Length: 394
Image 1: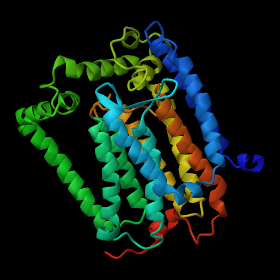
Image 2: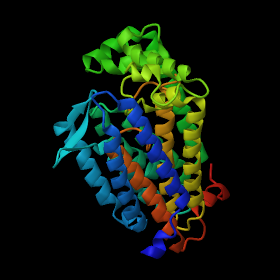
Image 3: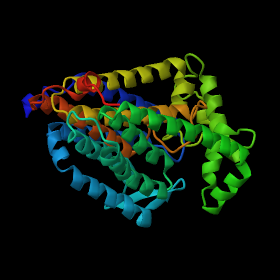
């Protein structure tokens, strides 16, 4: 066991420790003298548990996860379905289950890693052949759409979209044909542009439709992004104050616990979704840049692990994990600077939340398992090189 632990990438461990320190410090600032006071200590407990999970998963041979991926997928899917009917509702989303001891658990977060493992299982069986559209791509997309629909039923758009990002990243590295990828990209771009145009042109009809299905809050999240002139004061309150706080931070920030907007509680959810705003206002552009640099190094190290892996499933899984993290980082930061609509997505390793942190730590643990056991496989070449070396039939 000790020999295997020595193979762990301790640069990644060091980055995780730094992110833990940032999270606890920023949470303390965001929650001091509020009803959420003490969340930083709870987050420390989550991190301790997270590191235990990280090391345990690192020692587990990731190929066992691939071997039992079908059963893991069915188990995770059953949780998603059950929580639709018995889940607790927070911030308009019905996606939390209460475990013994009063612990809240969000299956949608848990399923991200399950989806990565399951898609890795499906794609690795193709070996070096290109994915066939009807036989491979369509079934894989359908198997992803099922949990996507279940999470949408929970009214959790942020996590549901992460499944599609994971699917896109893993299909790409999984040897999808260029023609199919271009067609999918064209359909997505056309649907995206057409959807935005339709939303603006038929705004009243769209509003009435979402009102009829009880999803008016979706409009309130989209309006500040696409049609700020139509957004109500309630809808624009969050993003407007977040942008103001970010702008106030300037280059060096207002100082620890000196952020006027954050300390006055003008920005909602500063302990979870809006925690980046706290960093921006109190530590400025420099603080934000350091955080992004840490994310960059973390993702770079994960990619290096995939390049050095002989087992073809290893790079597939790591690409899925990287896609998951990149989506969360881009969406969380982008929604507060006007690039993305407001969704309930947390900032990885920084925002308060036990489920999201444990799953992210477990995901990095799986990557460490790939580092430890991936070189033992006897594949001719890693997928990441065969992706560009193979000649595709168009």
